[in-house]
Length: 195
Image (cartoon, rainbow, N blue to C red; front, side, top):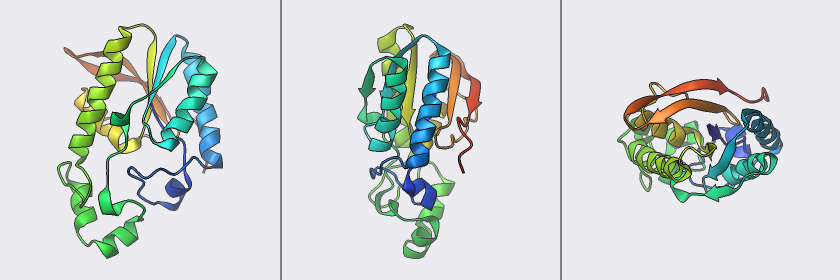
């Protein structure tokens, strides 16, 4: 199961977070509790693995606590580094760095100044997910709490066809995963309808 962290004030304001570290806002905490309900309904959760960024850790802590399982932090699950675009909204980024935002949005191999490519971020996150799946050896569901862009890129590399970009507090379960086979999405949900 993969989960996108709950909402932050920066999400609400439309600011690029990247690897900056804002906390969950009130709506984000509600979303975290909703995800925790969804996770516990799954049963057999073995571990919650999370990005080390605060918004993901806060979401994961609620989920792991409700499920009564350990939480493991993995820096490889961080959001894509957006360099000098972090903290800006789309209009400010387009105004301050004309063309850079468009290049980054249009190609997975574009690197914002001071940042990384979506492809590189996806590769590190996919490696993290695989290592945690291997470590569990099928013993309970692995719940991964991370960030929208990096999760989408990692899922693509892990064989999920056209993975969705999850909303804040959104989640999906992967029915199966085997390096020799393609993963498939079993279910997807936004978790809550907070606007």
